Image 1: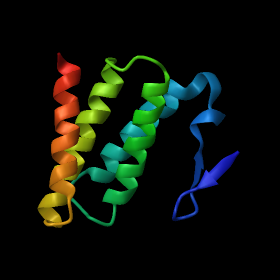
Image 2: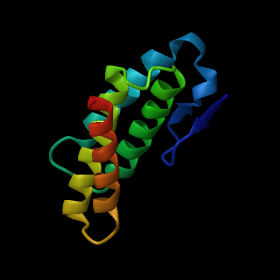
Image 3: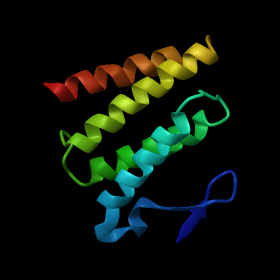
Image 4: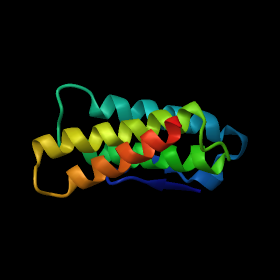
Length: 109
């Protein structure tokens, strides 16, 4: 079953993708990076956040928490929140950036 995002774009739920979960995770990771790209825009950051979080969930459900996909998405979330905090300081994005940066460091061990 497809669900739609806030703009009405169909978004498959992770339980709908079957054996294609890894490919969907890769796609969503790339989409998140694209939405985060220059010039930074707080209008696109919520969309990038949703893409990264769904990608992270798919990678984690695949059962390889130390895999490169999980590492890059975790790092991407840290970078996203750092950039978001730079554009909208005081809204808690610095704390989210720190949390995801900590997780990224743990995965490097």
